Image (cartoon, rainbow, N blue to C red; front, side):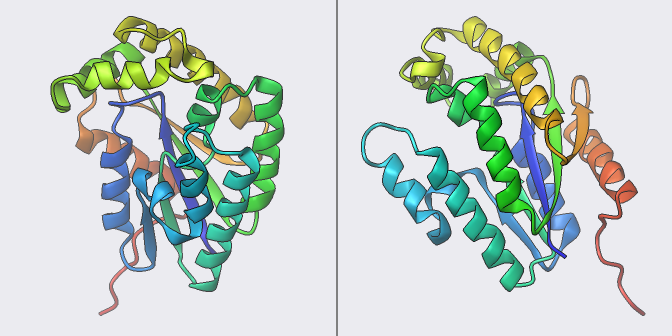
Length: 223
């Protein structure tokens, strides 16, 4: 059986990539670490990259579903035990930015759930106050990052109200509420981890314990 562990969160700075790297290392051989940028570089997602490069900066929902279905099929064929996905499924931030409303998103998530159904799905949701997380990202990234980030959102129809850090945080708070509503309509197992005040190591320990309770753990070495 293949298990998809989708690590998502309320925007930049909550530690998604850090948790994914730690999970991939912990789970060991047989684990595929699908990094955030792989959605534009993996051959199985070529159609996504092609549509994104057409100039609109958007991708059709049907293309996202088809490529995800192909990725799950590829992983099953390769007998990958774990797929650790950084900000991949269920694509909500991108779809919101591209202007899709809640009704459209509900239909999309329902179809996506069918596409990944051959695999078990666990969604790890990392949450923190968006403004705190954004300020953490500002301290971590290069100068000018927040202008790039808010500018990227401002250019999209669904996030055109964003113009600075405060408005970005307000948008992310609303998006978090929407995401939780959408996830609640699926049969996916959702692990909630509040990262506020925790170190990266403490966050990973909590995630690891939650997964271990679900029978997901690193292989034991035989003597």
